[in-house]
Image 1 (tube, rainbow, N blue to C red):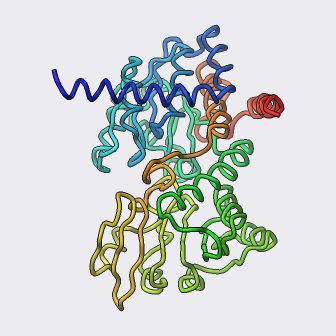
Image 2: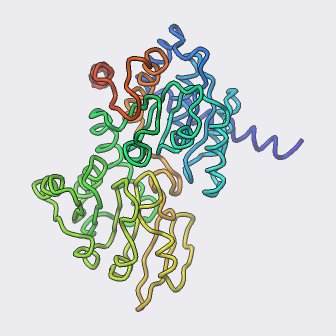
Image 3: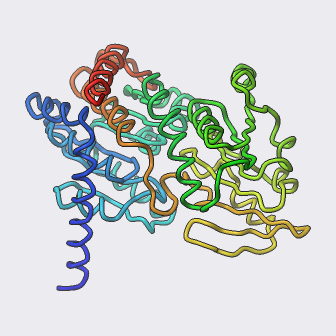
Length: 396
């Protein structure tokens, strides 16, 4: 027995070593883990999770398990890390999925989590909530991590979710700490690492000036990039202009930009009319949750040929002698690209404490919450702000 067994053991050991480092730098979750071990708020509950399976998430799941939760989990498409899956399985958790899963297999993984009949959901993109809308039996509530998931809960799923869903992304703490600063940093770092291109003097176009778009634009400019913003909301577009960025339409910037990064949470941001006009050699990348902001099927249909240059870089030849570079197949490239790191440990310590205390509120006081999508309760936001400030002061 085998090479497969030895390989699994090696993967689990590698995952354990990586999680040990992450755990040692997440003091907010360490405190919550100790508190949960005393209170056991999740005793008798099965938490079903669909969230990026990477080391920081493993520490979150350890924290929930310390509070008495049984965990059944899967990752998001393209971002699962196999050593973390092996580690979590070694901790007795039921985990579905692998790095190489295609989109159909990912959907089957999510369905497997739903079929396990969780009582609480920990969702990312509202995939679990969408399944639960058809059969919500036994579910008392849950949390949703993302902008994209919040839009789905308030859009296509509005009125169909008969239990409370706390949208973590509604928290101003998450918006500032994780979305603006951590996503901004990780997107720029991932662009440089994956492409080996420098930022200085390069022309970037950021689609969306929400919190993630703000951070991406800010950190690109801080490293010497020339940055323009596309934003359909007049107030946000005004803010981008007042912050000193060029503001224009996708059509107006298609021939100016050298790198185009989508950060909107909405589908169909870059489509065929854009591909018909975009400058030769442009780099296309997405940092939104779903791989739908760049219409990759339309791009492939428009292209006359393609070459895989790297495991996260593809060249697509276009009519008229032009070509574009597609990063990570249009998926969230700071987590689905090569050697993914994602957001900083400190930001995810804050974000996952929001998750943990919000899930505790669902487990212990769901009847105090309204049905459907809603923001993080204010008392939780303020408690976490106090804890984060204390942690930052301790690091001085």
